[in-house]
Image (cartoon, rainbow, N blue to C red):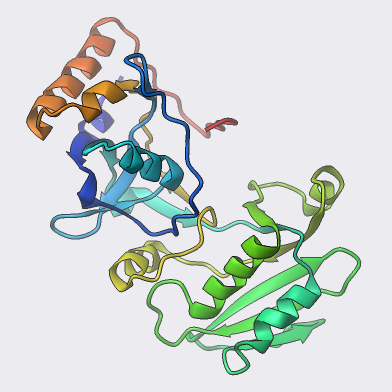
Amino acid sequence: MDLRALQQIHIVEQDRVLPFEWDDDARTEIVADPSGILRDPLLVTPLDDEGYLLLDDVRLYYSLIDAGVQHLPVQICPPVQLSVQTGPVGLIHFGPDDLMRVASRFPDRIELLQGDAKHVDSPDILHLSFEFANAPAIHAHIRHSSRSGCPVPLDALFRTIVDSGSYFLIPEGGEEADLFEHVPYFTGSIILPHFDLEDLRCAVLSGRPFPPGLFQIQAACRVLGIDFPVQVLTDQSGVEDKQSFLAELIGLRARRRRIACYDGRVYRLNR
């Protein structure tokens, strides 16, 4: 078994880990008693010489910060091992009229077209496709000349969606027609343009974060199940002591043959 991926697991100061998504004030419950554990390391990639870009579990991250955790267990994954995927986004309680109202606030930055979309060959224009229940498809061209972080109209669009209802990322391979039948008040969907890792880095560096939950970051290798005690993370010892504890924790699992490696996709249904 190749255990080199375990060398990506480290303890780092929490202020060196920076999310590219809004804080939507939702939190993950963290057990505060001595038996509480952090099951998985946070997935990060280098942002600059000092910091790391947080790639998943933004709600858990903010929950840990609120709990006073000063150090975080992370898996530091090099960019070459990462890919950014954007699937369709399902909408709840958001319809064509809501979209028109958002577009009216940005007449020079959002163009809406019904029916077939005309092609715009420009790096400054982002194309979004909307499908609504019992309504024609709507295409949106969003001007994004700065190419730095989340476009202002896209930010406004998703804040309006949150004010009206909610949204969720449709799993890869999911059939939107099926979801119309099984998700209450599912009113439509959006196909977003492609964003890459550099766009997510720029979101942090420019202070223009993306809405949470729009992207899935796939790592060539993901380490799960470290089960690190929250009590150790909250104590007053330094990074070196906690890194030693982590190394011993991993070593103990290896000696007891508790480490398994799986090829292919893994679907976790309750993160």
